[in-house]
Image (cartoon, rainbow, N blue to C red):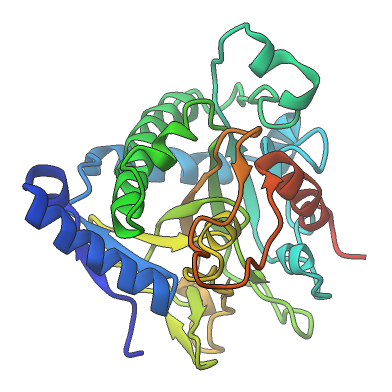
Length: 326
């Protein structure tokens, strides 16, 4: 594996059946061999990413006391400000490491209907309210505009995944009608000193959802992906593209034909810390919480995973990684 493949989605968006099948085959190969790909031709306005990048930097530059006014209320919520030391994502897979060297601001769906699906007991924590800082008025509109573009891209990817797997084209899109996708601003400051042994900017983990869409930044100490052969490779940061990876739910749906890939964010080299500040923008695609995840690709194979709902699979595992390292 020489690197993460780059796939142009424009022919899938605008082309006919032959073009769509061709692009879907490229997506399938990437998902089967690495679990990561880079997409161009996605249709998301570049200005939305640029506006959010600026607004996010302005927020993270605010005093800590101000950021803490919108601190995440509970570990099982992916909402509000998450300060340094409060996430150890390696714990989601049973790893034991120091806390991730990062701070986060996260939202989910901002306005949802007043209906039982969104307000009933099973709706928590997927539809917990967002928290917005008073001192950063530009953050909310920038995040919501970007969020809408990511939802559209998630649906496009859902179509491509279904075609790639030979499923009805709306299979995954139908399971996003009541989604609780998460948008996370991931700020990795330049290290102020030596990090603890084994500490990373983000510990090695796999993502829990259907798929993840990341706006990657070219700065030292970035996203690294572990290939099937055990080699670690850097994810590219190409202008106007997104890094996309498969999550655990997709791995279960495909009975391991597509596998979620361990990844983490490295510590910058000793000579690079002064210019290694990094901001990544991650969109985590979470299907309807009551959707059943059952193997769809096990005709001639042993079924490796029992059926499970999205909610039952995700909630406790996320909370495990959300808390600070002991």
